Image (cartoon, rainbow, N blue to C red):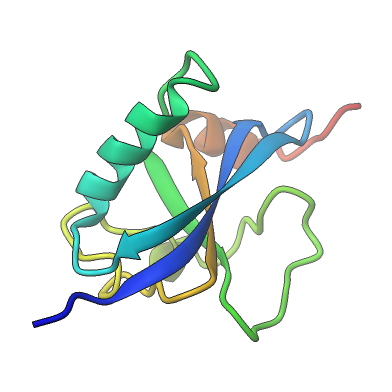
Length: 119
């Protein structure tokens, strides 16, 4: 059985308040892997770019779908868009050309409670 592979863009969010993020494109991502495994391997790869570890992914954009006006990511629909770590990427809604935000859940909670941005 061939496993489904996809191109997934990961938006590494360093700061919601300062709108500081970096996008990294991953090719050949197996959609049958668990979200927690993708998070673990992505953290290892991104550790070459940054020294902090992140623990949560949320779908920002699907191919051929509408984009949000938010500069970093939408604060809405967490129940359906935050990827459950025990699901496969495919079951969590990730498909080819999906863009996901990758961030610290604690930082997101603090920002969501007081969503002010600074420059």
